[in-house]
Length: 249
Image 1 (tube, rainbow, N blue to C red):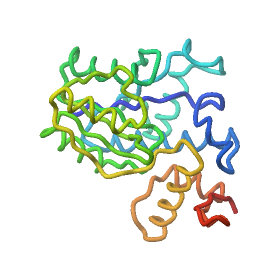
Image 2: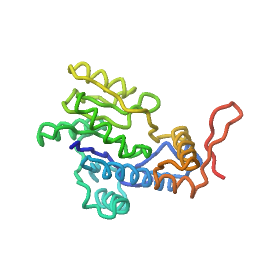
Image 3: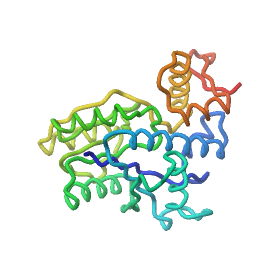
Image 4: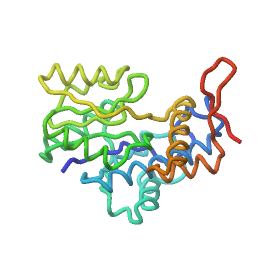
């Protein structure tokens, strides 16, 4: 069984999706609503797969002061998605950077707990579904490193059966950095299909278009994210320069 860690932040305006209000029609408060929805879809996908769900939360001392405790806020979100937060394991993140937190989590799971495989998945990748999580687990039986590419050289999934050099492993383009580290360690590296990770309005436009298309075609959609998209009337059209543009009706 693969242990899949979601490195999550508490849903606060000063913490999650900081670039979205300036690059999309959403306010800071609405960006928080979207983050919660995406996180719910991600933990639902992991919990519905054959993997073990681990929610890694930021220590309150590493975050701007806010109302409530980080763990309690995330437990509430997960419980709302799964019906019971007891279905997930919660542990505090250790490290001063994203790369350090990812590396510490993966190293602890693989070396201290001796799990067969471990992975990190982005909480802002709502189109990840349980089939992708299970597909990644199958690939990890034959490869030491499995990566899920996103636009601009980012990743939404990084799975390992052996450790790599995680120092500054989040250096852009992250996909190439993690690939290089895997190859340098003598590991086989494989990939999942590309999926969007939401950080900016352009990222969100991709998700909105995909979700609206899948809804129209009667295909599987991330339910919580789709609800926020519908509630805020988010659509995609074409700007005067011919580029896709996110707007709200």
